[in-house]
Image (cartoon, rainbow, N blue to C red; front, side, top):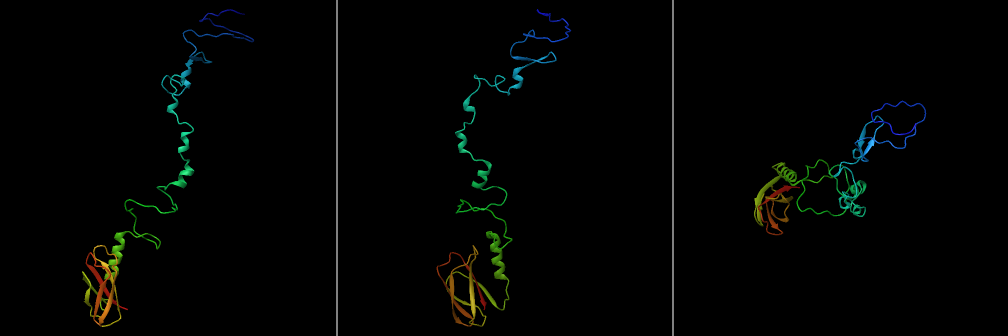
Length: 199
């Protein structure tokens, strides 16, 4: 059998049928015919881009990263070895300078850095924790005599800047069993806490 079949005609065929042209009315080549008799636009299968799908008219090479520009980027494994991560343990080599002081937690182990506040507390505690019969504390502003009343030549002394709690360079000269002369290496900018103790 050959020839055209009316659009609304029913066709029952037994045996092999060869179709050379099948055209559905009211559609063009932008559609695909489906086995159940329906149809769908070809653009349905394309990315949602201006115009429905990529073609020469809307494809701009400047919108895509060229292979040469990708040379400026690192893979994740390379980045992990080049930059400091926010999480996890890392070993950092060479000198790193900071424009502002980093904030660190209080030290809990021997190899931990100690923040200034914790260090001031520890030094202050070390100064105040003592047997008052074996120690003498006072505050001075410059070199001069200090009478301690410990009744011995066997004394040593520690010196701390009142404002910063840093140690201050100074030495003592024993004058009597109850008096020493304190020599500062340089004139201290702040009052100095002097702790004289027996040894």
